Length: 574
Image (cartoon, rainbow, N blue to C red; front, side):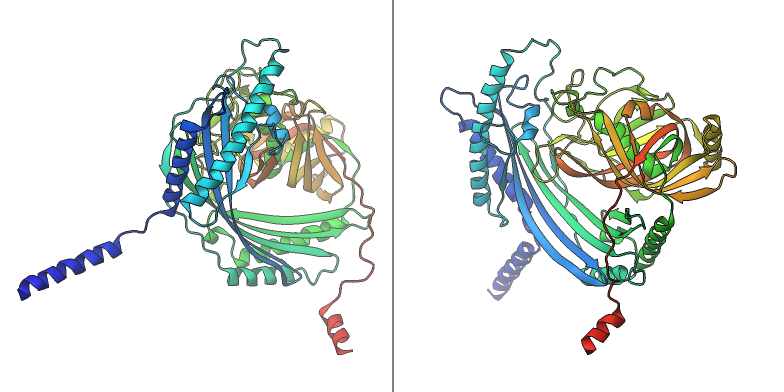
């Protein structure tokens, strides 16, 4: 009996140990199951009498954790953490060929009678019932809005000429099942607070730099997606950012800024203190040099764009115009519509967009992701091959001749996804080294009778207009511009201009490129919000570029000198 009892006790203890060692249930999967249950209930039962039931429903939940540290003048100005969950509900009425969706969606934010996405908060607790209830209300509201929009769309088509080439309203895609493992999300608040204080204090000895900021961010987004087509996706994305910025004014009042921006998918990927100290030194040196640099007049002539500046040019002048959603709609300029199979760039240039690339040359790329916000796997897409247009960036909104998504439906938060860039990569077969690039710049300037050419080494970013209600134009904001004397080859820093132009004219004036490519990591803002992107491009020699004068500053600098430590101490003593 004792042996039997001992055996029973041993078995019971083993059972307890095995139970304790079992992995805890994945709360993400539990919530996805709840989303799928509510989705199935609505698919089977949701229907307004005498009206159509939805043919497609998808749910997306984004759980966002964020930490932000901001330091100025050696002190922390903001130390904040936040967490929120947002729901996106897409309910489509009609059929894949013709449904309630349309370009007018982007002009409204949940207004009654429109088909724009219904934005709702999701529960922060992992409560399946609370989540299902929130989805139930959002689905009901979205379904009614979609019905109204479909009726309106049918009425408008009565007055329209039938287009035999009209693409379907929504693409048919294969369902995806994927559960990615959780990502670590450390954030050493004590360390980064110290780094932010010390780095922002580096600007204190330079009173001419009247303001500066160090911003450190950490973001984690967990995304749950289900659709009536059968897709179930659990994915996570982590992004760390570190930004060092300072501003000053020239004697004529022009506001000048310089910055260094870093992004990494891991905390360890951010630069260390030594590298950040070097970055701060360069920001200081650049601004002090820019204050003394002469402002130049508007310029039209040859210029070299360094890799980052070249990347911004392609992003603004070409990339946005190859987004599929811009090939349709009354308000779009449709620069490249109907141009597939035709030459749109010099024959030595090719462009691909590849969201599957995590890194390039050891540097992480911001535009990496596995699945887009419409549940489609991100795909490498050849946009231009040897100057000839081959395809567009495609969401699930088809374009004439392209009925499937290539995984570029993207959005920030719970905004409606549209076709967006990810990792835009420019390739060239006509390359020269940097010295030859400069020699050709001087030769071209001489040929045009110019006393100098320009080299644009750094750029803050740009913007573009793609609508039909304005000029098809883009703008770039260069930071470090150098004038190259055609007689001596000497370079001198100048300021006070910004790049402007029309896209087709600008890109077809590229004569040759450099050998080395550079990476521009950042965020791009458009209809569906701000999304992380990268552009990879070599330096360019443009036969002609136009630079206009920047807006002239009129504000006076601060009337009193900045308070110093000594001055503050004297005041306290009094």
